Length: 302
Image 1: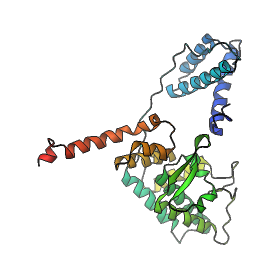
Image 2: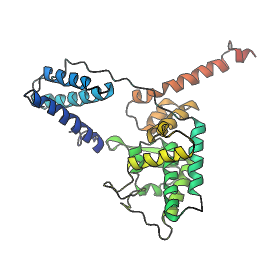
Image 3: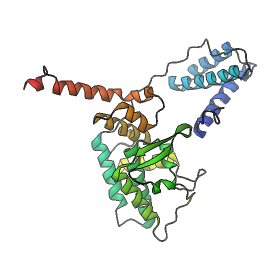
Image 4: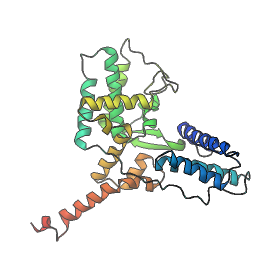
């Protein structure tokens, strides 16, 4: 159901499978099964997770997996009740996203471009530098999820204008502007990859092919290269990740006047509540707006 009806990604399916397997193991020690577990069995499992010192967010995710599983069994008539109904789980706190400053992003992009254009690099090193520059420019220009970015099809090169079509969660497609700098970096990478003696391994249907199970660059490999680039730019590696750059894209757009609904569309969020983690940026902008323009503000009086 998760795969076919909801179009859940493979990573999501794997996570649900791990969570349900873990719960099944606990229930077996109590002499029952995942399908037949009672409310007390589920309570015992949640208590065991807390005793193990598992973070609230992890406990909430595992309980969520069980809720959806038992809701499915109840809907399909395999159970007459939902044992998770009476259980209150740990409330997952949504932390403010880590965000890089614009100056830090500029340093990162400048270094990526300088390395991509360095004629002293070996052919293979130049190709890697051009690929990393394209990845970083595209990520900051579009705010794509890292899974969407590394799996971009090569067909995006045929896009006319300054936008590409991206397939996101649940197979939903959206139009994403890429901007001039990202477009240039992407074309430079493709040009370098076509030079004699430079054959990329992997599935050539992808823009960023690699010798991996998927046929394209892995999220982990990109995250590793991004942290290495940050360190060379004098930015603490612990401060950056592909997701942090996605947050920077959204926060910087809002800071400069973008509409929250537009940012929701660009990020591919199905629910505006997900995008509202960025309201702290809007609040800062509103405070500045009132401070700078209200008739009774000190700035206006001057």
